[in-house]
Picture 1 (spheres, one colour):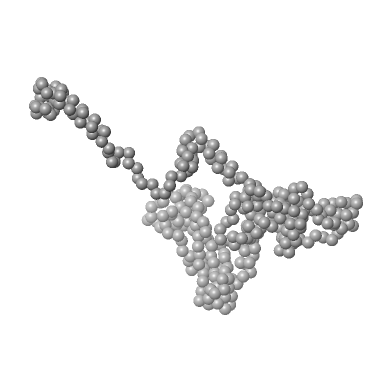
Picture 2 (cartoon, helix red, strand yellow):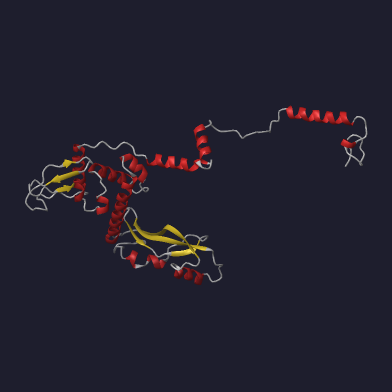
Length: 326
């Protein structure tokens, strides 16, 4: 150590024998205090904030990361999202108009002229219950059988039909489902809020509609043929991650290993679910068929369609005799 006062190497300034040691130490302490009083431009400096301060957002973040209150905040937000809005105004006239519209569109069958139970009486004028259900009653005094209007919707499964939709709500849900035109999946929560019903009533109906739409598309694809200039392509619609020891896809994994004997064994693979499509240029007519599964490492490029897949019976049978430039 070296003394800052006399320069000797045998002691420091606190043990220096010179008489001015105490005054020197007091001067150093006073200088440190003065330096601490002076404003330091970098002390406590924060980056500039763009825009105003959102105190509500700051409070929500504070509650979200404050331990026990996190569950309470999440429950509050979840209940707020589930909150139903005011139900759509439903009257007997609007319900009858909805029934006529559904029958005209083909979602409801025509009411039989004679009661199917007694085979004698006819049905009177439609009536409405307190739960906004529309029904017809047989006018025969010995029968008096009630027929709910949704019983005429044979395309709806019994589990969905018995959930208590009114014709007005059913028509509104069908319009909400068809308004997207396949651009993106319909939001169950947003649809439930707009109609004013619980979200659990929307999910089963939309699942039924998606199944009917898929069945109709498959039926159309089986009967459709394309001609003239046709473009054939394949695409992956979904990938599923599997382990290297998967027993479900062990044949596909073994096929990839035989084709790449010198490649290192990857930790996991991706199963590519693909579809083949043959599109007629200029008309938009397209035939879709499922393609074979492809198992590749996760770091590999997406699989390409092969000549064997395009020349398979799933695609070539759909090409008309006038098809060219495939």
